[in-house]
Image 1 (cartoon, helix red, strand yellow):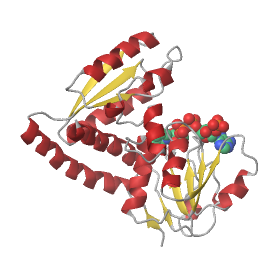
Image 2 (cartoon, protein in one colour; image 1 turned 60 degrees about the vertical axis):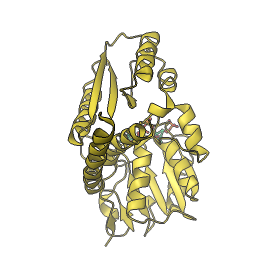
Image 3 (spheres, protein in one colour; image 1 turned 180 degrees about the vertical axis):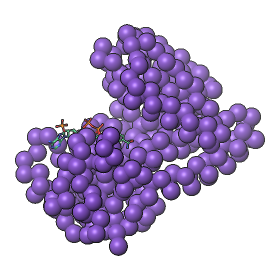
Length: 277
Ligand code: NAP
């Protein structure tokens, strides 16, 4: 029977522990951690994600400060807002919801976030530090996956990990985190040739592609650890998981695997940022 890497249950138990840490901060310092969320424009999906993040803050007794900016906001205007939040001692974490409207230089704005407040792990400096094994907040989805692997004692050292996807927030940091835990890592992307042959070598496969059921079950060898970061409206991920459940070693369900770990890691890192401040 394969192990279900249950992100829902791990995130719920972590929330209990985080509530206690927030209470301790409140009693000792007289304030609670604050996560500032910046939403630019009116994309409904982004609005929902920001709302879910605010709700998670409330559940553990911390606060969120919602900053909503107009669709036509310029890079300079957004940079001024980020600067204000960087200088605000009451704010411990800053989340700039991705994606921002096309006229904004998203990388420049991410990189303007003070690394001490970069609880979503999006800055280039934070990525570089993480890659070098220096203390830094990791990008939340791959960091959440690493927490899940640790929770279930999944062996990484010496294993062959194949990450399909190389985005700055997911595939790339995922590959670095696995490498730092001594996996041998292959990163695949849209120009990779013979993708199936690469995936077939994986002891650990991570689907981070953004296409429903893109990674087919016969690309995955018996006994592999199957991590699916994707989530699509048809309630499936990037991997055709169903036929694999009987023959893999462990898997993340969709929903209830990687998804809950992302927001949970964001609030965990905000509490840590507050404790470090
Ligand atoms: P993204 O920025 O669109 O990146 C997708 C990656 O997949 C790119 O590196 C792309 O390669 C690669 N790719 C696309 N088509 C491919 C193909 N035919 N063969 C091989 N590789 C291909 O997406 P993302 O933001 O990383 O997200 C990936 C998935 O994770 C999505 O399903 C998203 O919903 C999910 N996600 C979930 C969470 C969560 O909280 N659970 C958070 C973030 C993302 P190129 O670089 O060559 O274009």
